[in-house]
Structures are given as C-alpha cells and as structure tokens.
Length: 420
Picture 1: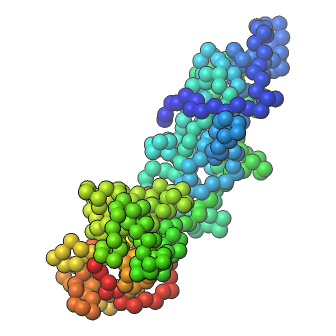
Picture 2: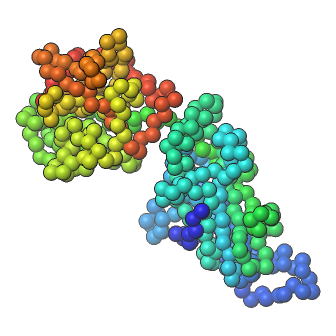
Picture 3: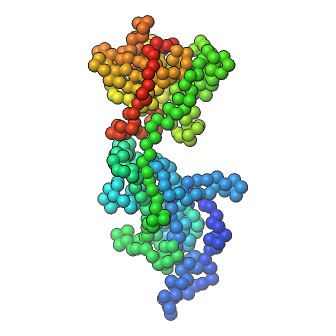
C-alpha cells in the first residue's frame, strides 16, 4: 500500500469552493444531535468525502490549469485518474481509496481489484488529509503480472459484454475529527477490522463505471498499410518518403537507392504509431553508432533493442509481428511485418508486408524449411537466410489464448528475393 499526498489540485466551481465556516465551536454537550447540521461547517473537526470518480485529463489553457473530465468507461489496461473530493482538515487523518467490482466477471472473491501506480501494483492508496479539496492519483487499470493480465483478457473474451463495473471505496482512517461524513450526510459504514469509516461510490445505475476489454491487434499495422506502394525509384515522392524512414526511424541520412531500408522502415512504423496514436511502444533507439536501427538483426539483439519481446521461430507469430531473417555467414538481414502465416508439411510460409521489398513497401512471401534446428529460406538465386525469430515491443501484450491476435490477412504475394 502506498501513501501519498494530493498530487494535483483543481479549483471547484464557485458554488462548491466555499470552505466551511470556522466560527462554530460548539462542544455539542447540550444537544449532541446538532452535529448532524453543523458537520459541513466544521472545517477543523469534520471530514466530508463528497465524491469519488474516474476521470481523464483535459488541458484547459484558457483557465490556466489542467482539469479533469469525468468518464464512465475505460479499457482494460488504460491509464485513468482517480479523483476524490474531500472537505475538512482534522488534526490528523488519512483518506484511503480502493477499487471493487460490481459484477462477478473477474471474481476476486471479495478482495479489492489490483491496479498500477507508477508501475507498482496496489490494492489501496492513501492520501494525507491536509485541507485540499481535490485529491488526484493516476492509475493503470491492470495487474502488474503479464500472466495475470492475460488471464483477465481471457475471462473478458469469453463473456458477451466483455466488460465489468467498478466502484470506488473511500475510507477515512486515523482521524481526530468529531465526525466523518460521506456525500454531506452521515451515510457510510464502520469497518471494525480497519477501524475506519467507509462508503462506496459509483453504485447507482446512472453513475456506473464500465471497464471493457477492447482487443486492439497490432495498431502499427494501420500505419504500415498506409505506406504500401511507396517506391524508392519514384523520384516524385517515393525517394524522399524513404529518406524520411531513414531520418525519423533511424536518425540517419542515407541514400535509398544505395542502402537497404527495411529495418529503418520497421522502426519508423513504431515511432510513427506512438506519434499518431499516442502509444508508448518501444523502438530501437535512433543512435547509429550504438543501436543502429538501420540494421535488421539489431531487432533481436537485447543490447541494441532492450524494449522487445522475442518470439522463437518455432512458434506461431501473432499478426503484425516483425519477422527477422539473416543471410548465412553475414550480418545482413531483413525485417518485415507478418500479415499471413501458413503451416506446411515441410515448414511454413510467411507473407510479410515491409519496406525494401523489390525496392518498395509491398507484400512478399518467404518459404521456410527446417534444416537441423533452424528454419531456412532459400531465394531463387540460392541465397540462404536463417529465421532469427519474431519481435514485438514489450509494451504490446498479446494473449496466446485469444484467436483475434492470430487472425491473418487473406493476402497473396510474390516470392521475396530482394534482400540487400
């Protein structure tokens, strides 16, 4: 469990921004019931947790601050903000927040739902109540373990709604205030074990918060397909476009006619995806002396591309994985995106959509036969190329148990011989 202070504050609308009247100081000796009416006005002696919800961040430069927009749904694995509005300033007190299910989809057996805070798995976070009105924490809606995350994906994929509903539980602990209230009233429950008052938010039908499993397969392939047909020999457009693959994907200025660009294109596709889709997929660092994204075999080099997941050549590749092959007895190789995979009696055939395939971005086929422990592709010219494996960014979590990740294109292509 992590303890934090309010990380960001946002002014409430004027009608909500009035702090309770500090002038009242009744001891309630004569009329104890009077506390019910005075709680919202006792800033030194009471705490009122007014609201708790999920939100996304929205920039509001005209107001001079970053605001938060309430949301009622998100995807499994998304980053969202927990927003808790809490009045009061006791001599001491902690605001504890946890997340719980409203349905039985994930079946946590009465336990709080895990989530990530700065990469660490938590089931509860705490704020020190310090007089702030708004308490904020960014979280990620997933467990830390990729195995646990894949299990959740599998559970979601087997139900019609592919979703569950979450509530936020707010607790006030270790407080010296005379009273703790929720939603301006004395609602809430006392937890005898934790010695805390708590209440659940987002419990009504109109305020349900839905977490949905949206299968997004290899989003970089949308970028790759848009480049299909670019030709390095087209001096009116293609030549300069390929130079952009070098500069933006490999950080280098090279001549497409003289230099291979398949690897630069593959790295460019990941860089461009992050830019267009606001993702954070790892790519080979654009340092020509150390990492060199222009060399295909660096995709399967842990030192050159530490942000990768390498899938062995013996396994079925997910759609959109980057196939890496290498000339025998040479450092030269090729990188292409898998769009089709067919198993045959003596091996398998892959159709790859990539750059520098017959001088273009196009689809080529590669037939592999098993030779000893390796899978080898032999070109028409007799050049033998070893299958080194498939690569995806480590941030891309695909589930082997869900067929969607292995749905290939009904594509045809010529045999791939253009390896430079």
